[in-house]
Length: 272
Image (cartoon, rainbow, N blue to C red; front, top):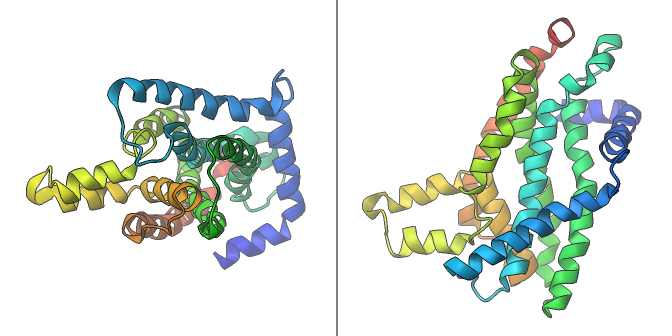
């Protein structure tokens, strides 16, 4: 990781240039521009709120529109960061063939660019909280660490997927589908406490209940979303029992993903 930090510092000007290019290309001919960063989470929030009115999801005392928007923020940031990271190398073919520089700059730039859209959504969340008379507490200080954790989770997929996508372009097509499925295995539409109640309290799966809950929380997004909702909306500290399994997953897989990316990097210019 020290090597990554050094590369980012040495090539910081290129990093900022690529980040600006990503933003310009994404919104250059979009009539609504950055408004698209708001339209997606707001539309999904409205759809999920409508669904909730039919199926009756217990939101634990937090207004459901705010709860689901707070879940969609880290989820969409992760989903789009990972997807853009996977496509980041093949979308810069011309640059790769001209000069050498650390190729990990591409996935990192793709993820970093999404922080702008995340910042816009924080403004929307603040407006929703004000509308419902909710105020943040001191626990909101955890937010920067949660965002950093989400960035690392996205890079875990981004490094590995970007390398594979150079050789097999199916990766770029398949990932959005796989991530859409992962959303239903993450507490986006429903809060994590419903899963915990079913498995740990009601023992719905019998002797397998605790193992299934641990398996569920190995998904980093389970802990990320629940912790974000806790510290921003509920005024509670992180639930470490929900966070740690996913953190272990990222801690193990991120170095392996980066090592795989660096090993494949030598042949990018020849294959791409």
